[in-house]
Length: 361
Image (cartoon, rainbow, N blue to C red):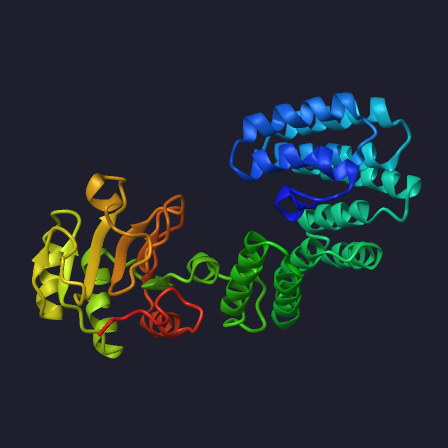
């Protein structure tokens, strides 16, 4: 399925003019008003197949999959034996985790109209979710042959990456970026290129075979301090690892900004040879190390930019639901690990990592 941001708001075609209002509302972030406009449009112009597709995608992006399934049933009432309602039903069932039912509905849609590219795109997505990667690639290749589209290239890249075919995945994402008509499409594809290049740091491995902290690095670009088997590192050991990493990479911070009152930060500051402060310095030439044991959402934390231009941010216990820090100790969702200094150095120097081109000295 292709998201609404992939359709132009203003166009000369009569059917496209009807769609311009809900598209504009959605692009302005007015989702509730856009939904009302799509509801009206599918009632007054039920023959407008694109309206059903875009309304369905609105519900899908909002994770309202039961409502999306109900919309597919309503489309069937208006469009009869058309392949589109069956395709929408299959896509909704897949999102609800009913993969086999969803694939059966998509197979039914393909029998009704084997030349409808969207059916094969959704079948590829369903097979990918099931882990049937060869089937997913065959379906996506057919979808692209019927209707060349950047969205299909984007999904194909994800399938290839999951199969461990990182170079082919990168080529597919780059194709999606080049085919993009809108900034949001291009930025999404370029982000996936960077993720794929980080996964390529582990040749011969598929993403699902990597340890959690290495997947975290690949997905976010954050540098994990731990990851080895052995005695799990405590907070003081992780703080000491930061000092060793800074020495090995010749990082020279000017201040340690402590977002909590842990005494270990003072030991780390002495090892780094810098003072301790409670907030970011006003000096634009400062190179701060912003440190916290775990993010809690306190005001002192939200005042820190998500991405620093100078310096780095370290969190000893990273919650996967928070934006990633530049350096992390343990993921709170996985068992603690021992210090992994060799990989920390490698990750910190990776050209697609969070610290690449950061001013750290």
